[in-house]
Length: 164
Image (cartoon, rainbow, N blue to C red; front, side, top):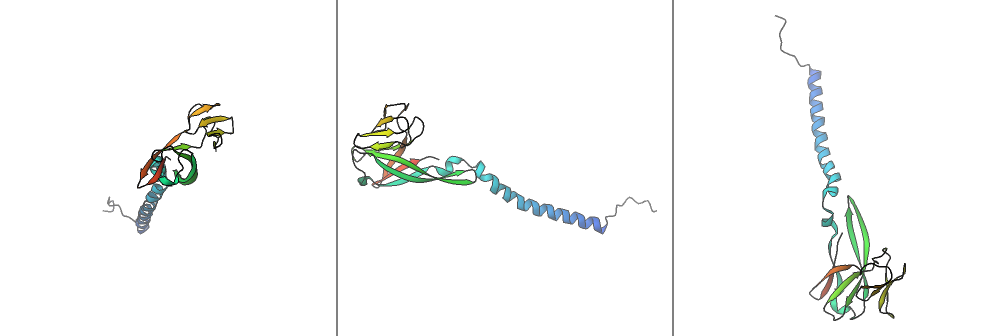
């Protein structure tokens, strides 16, 4: 009886199937980690990457009653790219124990304010915005006081918290 229904697999078809299966396995094994590497920075929470406490120095190094400029370098993760920025701020203490950290960015249009020690005030050169030494807006167009950073003191060192 020559009409048998037993399918015969040729050697060529068998080897083609094996090669395709091995190729699919290797392609999957390579693409899953590669895809994870590409996508994971986008999926991770952004706040996890940048927010942290920065040491500004000994509390004894700050003058009482006069704001002092300080800078910290902040690395922010934006997708899979890292960006380093400099955050500038003014630190003020009226008693050597309690500290405030104020942004140097005017709340009107984002210009950088300058401390004028002879006038005991901050001045924004863009539109003549004026802030007192505690950062309160007192003249000009700024709608609110200078933004503040969180501060803490540990073992005689002043730290400031910068968000990402």
